[in-house]
Length: 466
Ligand code: BG6
Image (cartoon, rainbow, N blue to C red; front, top):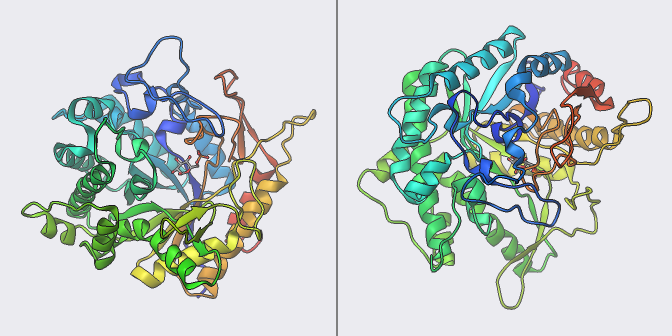
């Protein structure tokens, strides 16, 4: 298969890490707005409210809100065909449960989408990227509560109607599968466990409610505009058995089950045998209410979007049937200890397409690294060029040699933004450097790195010249 002529090359961001303006024009607080910055190996502190004297990275982030024209012009200069961003849910519904949206919030995204279209850049929009309104968490228990399904549906219907004709590619929940993988799914589902709560039961419950919300969003999105393409979004953790011992191979399968749990329901429209087995392994179940099965079946997604950063290794242990680790003697690691594995991306593309036969969209991939501004002002990020180049080569092999249909590729953080894991600025992904430090100081000035011209060349050659 040839590289598609209209392949969507671009970059990906999320409002809570990029936009800033956390209270401007009527925006409400999101779960990100009470999360402090930390550093590698140190968990981020989460508060119940904004407390004076604390630094919360999302409040200003790198201020896309006031720099969007400048940033989009730079993306256009690189030749972007698309740009992935999220709509900040509490910018549209500040509490989340209102009947009427916040017009100023809607108007902001109109300006952004219009600016993108001025350069022929297709917006690709995540409806929920770690930005659940804080009010819904505090007053409704977040996704534990089925009330959120309708709140989310109302929000989705509002933006589908408002941006009809301006946005065609949507995805529902960012990295929804991390709800099960994380010990506490705060980013994904707004959940911090209360004392005595049965963790696995809550994870299954919130996932079920998010599945229903996603299915509703898909149905509404298609009804508003049949041209809409609405995907699910997962983090794909390519995993290898540590050895060819059958127990290690089984461990690898067990390790992948919580991930396919999500794509199975969202792509196939029901809880498959893998899902019921996974629930059994977790010692819990899902309570289906009348109409749930029909809704899930009617709201399957059009494509699978996924992020890919690194691969892992699974092995069987004596006391548990699987254990995952990052150490792989065949792979080097990033400054943040993530194994570097371009072949893992090719494997991810093949595994997902083999399983679902749905178009794929690589919506995140990248290298978080410490960049140095040289005395002459340049930033020589050859390590980033090598990382992305090798992953783009693997992507092309999956398309050209393995015949996997891929819609596009948006690398993570084409401009430096806040890290979700640590809240740091020094973990930089961008082709564009932003003058801002971990303590929040800096001028926010933008500057091209060496990789800027490189990515421009990659796009101009449709991925051939890496
Ligand atoms: C993905 C998220 O998990 O990884 C992004 O969708 C995040 O929001 C990205 O930024 C990279 O992780 P980090 O911790 O380096 O920001």
